[in-house]
Image 1 (spheres, helix red, strand yellow):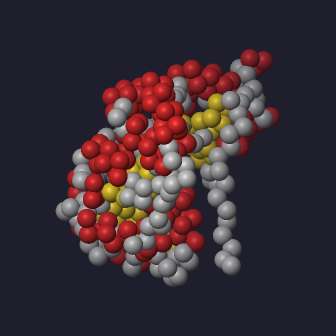
Image 2: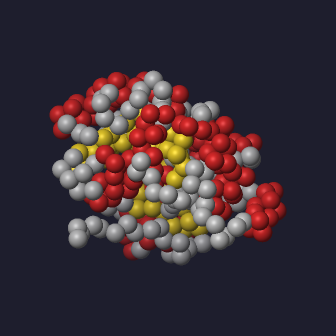
Image 3: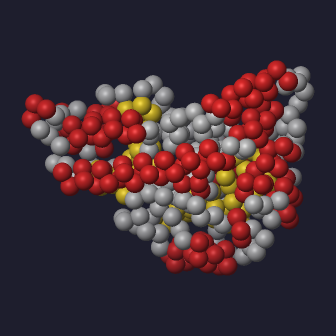
Length: 356
């Protein structure tokens, strides 16, 4: 058996959880009655509908595609694994960015593949020319990246993704659009122009349905039929299918809440950039097109521990970087109040970060 490092799930032990890019509120209070009534009518003795027709139809309408262009998965993670496992085998190479979604690495390792990465530059810029050249030089079998990027929040422009698709017409190009709603630009309109283009989406982020694990793979009909051969049967349970279809009727609620999060993101970034100047320590925060803000500091461990001591969780990475989910206005205020005490030393009124 191959030795694979296990994926570690997010810490959920603290009051304010800004470490998993979940939205902070329950969007579906008005839908609770219809959602709970689903329980009473569910035939728990029956297997789920394998083709997930109701939710596939609902998401096709939302995404502006046909039902035949969609595979529904147990989270977009399953769809990413479906693509990687059907393409990558021992010795084959996958091209992605550094940093990017950690599950790309995990699924590639499981298949015995090799991961090739092009580093995102210091100011969050992505050198698309270098990315293409690296893919050609390394003779990669699959290209995958998140857009907006997780964890940096930076984006690759549509015209540059088109260049990537044109440069690699013979291998799959996967754009993970888990955070699409916070950005607004999508490659879905190109799925019938580039027969190698695949887009993945999720209900876990902007739609606020992380608990039910529903994701989507969107591509042209030929690619969908090709990938269906690798899909396990009954992969999405009945409750997730039905609850997801109900939630997709509340698109106005989604848009309203997404606009609030975007507004909070820009406000939070502005305050963090001010804190960057005021801080007695080196720290940097970066603009984002998602529902989180990426940062770097050589005092990361002390920062993370200082926040944890005040019941605030953020996501930390192996280097000097970290990621903060945009929370509710109340959570963001609590975060900023605590960060000021940690980063702007004010004698008896503040902490000394080096002592945390």
